Amino acid sequence: MTNYFKDLGERVVSSFTQGALSVLGLDAMNVLTVDWTAALGVGGGAAVLALLKALAGRGVGQNDNAAVTPSVARKE
Image (cartoon, rainbow, N blue to C red; front, side, top):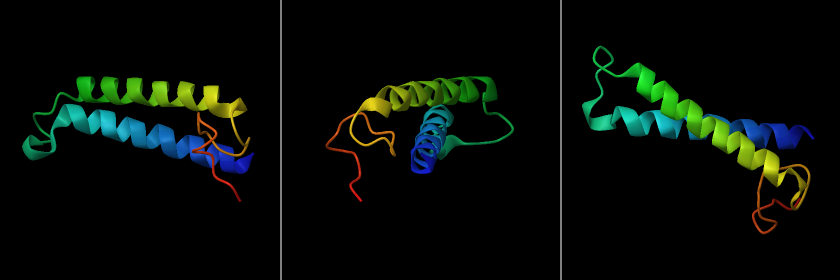
């Protein structure tokens, strides 16, 4: 169960970061002129989708990870 929540947390945080960075644009990032509302909105939306996907994958494969397909599930 603990592995599942670690995996879930990693997926949600990475999706949020990827979504926010896609709005910011790494080559033109200036913290004074960034549209933080859009960046946080897209990042938050990506995080929610990652959370929903991981919750949907809860019953697939092993119960200790958030993978949606059994072939991605870790085997220990």
